[in-house]
Image (tube, rainbow, N blue to C red):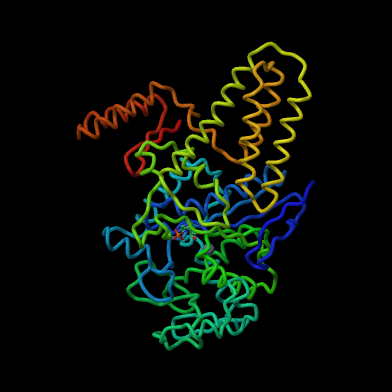
Length: 473
Ligand code: AMP
Ligand code: ZN
């Protein structure tokens, strides 16, 4: 097998990938903070992990993937002080933080499905792992990495020699850049909270230090190790996660175990809109549902978000999205033509056909093995499509060889799912009628149609933003 190489944010070098256990990969991804509908910028980062996972599976690895759900502790502006993002939203909407979490977990899951993301093996929630976090904080206090002030616990970054190695920040630089310290109980400006006391916080738990809630970073250390062990292969996130989040995660995890925690760090550069980072705080965002409502295919959105290299910014434009839609259609047309040709008479497979299939699949593999060079990989796919379209008289055996090649490519790209549906047309029609009834505010008809769908064995779910999803019971 040819080498697989990835850029490692930790070493700042391209490295050859060697798994901890042969044939197996353990992957952790920082997931959503569930206080708003995720936007396409968030999904650029999540899809980077999806592409990595699918590619590693294509290479034959058994991948265990964990993605956390942050439902407590993430403060506004990723800062040490200020409101908790979820609680702020709970107050705004006059709802319980857990209700807020559920609304946006559902929204995230629905959008993930629209984008054909392979679900992680588990999506652990911070609020369901408070015990694990408390245990880790206790260990850090025992080992002298953390200190208690009243009901708060902080990590003393001067105790962890490698602090700053991931982000390139030195403690001196950080101190020089720090604003006047508001919180004087900390030993150093950049010490970060592991456990916080705040009587106003809506979500509180008992701990050895009194009632409080965990800092943002500790959840990923505690949950990743619970599900993946003390050391694992990959950790992914967006570039804004590098500091402080991932720097602090390393200090916590390696401080607690004394072992190297993560071997390869992969960070995606931002998706930009009009030259600026797409973000909730700037309000310059699009959700997946919004783009679908504008008439774009979900597979085109997926394609647009994966088709530029993860270590470069992706400037989102509607022209780009239209081009993505055309690209997906080219794939689709070629595969449809091959499916039709697989009904032709059988015959000997010409060497030129196997040669073409092997050559471009090898190019696709080699490109992705080179730090997920997706542009080059897609280039190989379009060369393959062009060659296949040139052959006019495929027999069924040749069509099958080519379809197998496309299936391998599709296992990585995941873009040919637009019209995949096991739901009978009759059910979809009833759901459409219900949508129309809702639009007319004819609630009685809407309820009756939902019941009728249920009687026929299907569950209808409303998707935030207007549409619906149908599942078999
Ligand atoms: P959050 O829900 O804020 O915790 O963010 C979830 C993920 O989305 C994190 O990994 C962020 O780094 C990532 N992210 C946020 N904004 C963008 C963006 N504009 N482009 C790419 N990734 C982003
Ligand atoms: Zn994290």
